[in-house]
Amino acid sequence: MAKQILVTGGTGYIGSHTVVELQEKGFDVVIVDNLSNSKIEVLDNIEKITGIRPAFEKFDLSERELTDAFFQKYPNIDAIIHFAAFKAVGESVQKPLEYYRNNMGSLMNLLECMNKYKVPHMVFSSSCTVYGQPDVLPVTEETPRKEAESPYGNTKAICEDIMRDYCASNESVNCIALRYFNPIGAHPSALIGELPVGVPNNLVPFITQTAAGLREELSIFGDDYDTEDGTAIRDYINVVDLAKAHVVAIDRMLSGKSKANYEYFNVGTGSGYSVMQLVKAFIEVNKVELNYKIVDRRAGDIEKIWADTTYGNNELGWKAEKTLEETLASAWAWEKNVRGLK
Ligand code: UDP
Image (cartoon, rainbow, N blue to C red; front, side):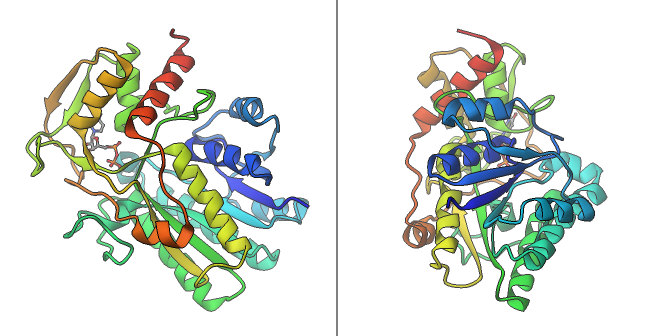
């Protein structure tokens, strides 16, 4: 029988791409999402891509009783991929308690249910934000974590610690944290992608919305960083490559290949690009015009970070495959599809 995977936050950006990859590998997927930052129509588009409509339950995982009731209704879950979380850095500064309650509460409810309902495996969405501005680049999994720059970032670090401590106390629970670098792009079908509510905080959705005419101009936050062109550097990973890393992590746990019952991996490409390089590549690949201006640095931004992916590549047998060019083309194809542009 197909293994059944609970994907929390499965109608969201990374979640929806992961659902598609899981279904294409023959997994049976159940999505839980409260639709606080995604739309139910995503299910239709997942079904268009894979031919399979995933089971869906709408509720908030920070509610313990509802989470319990879910596991009673679905007694055969083999593993969980836990995406559902608040993720806006700026908002987390304004509403720290909501961020701590939601992000940590839902993780703890899931861990308790894993124990109670005998679901042994979980993959957790962590972030390279746990490294802060590293002293040495690229960052390996050995690179020390640094004090978080925001309540959002702190929830990722604390959630990692909760999993580490819980796994140490309970050997029947098995967790893998994936530390994402900067996920961008969309599914090659252009049927699913990133759909931010309101003004985008992230670079690529802001670029695609500006190119589509929804925004006047992109602001590039700072050109006085200690980098070649002065703009900040990130490791931009294609969302489909990232989704595949989750499937590989699930396979690792289901086939008993984990080296410990709590592990963590960097998920990036290993290459850093500056904001200016990315903007220029977007214009060139998609043959579009893009208004941009240089403004002051954004508070809390780090200067540069990219991953050393050696450990993850060797241990997981996974590697990012898509080029930056095809990823930027996919981001634009998705935006055009959403806006009904040719
Ligand atoms: N950025 C920018 N203009 C924007 C949004 C982002 O110049 O409108 C820059 C940001 O300062 C950072 C990079 O793009 O250097 C990536 O930002 P994003 O918010 O996408 O991800 P982060 O790495 O900050 O989580």
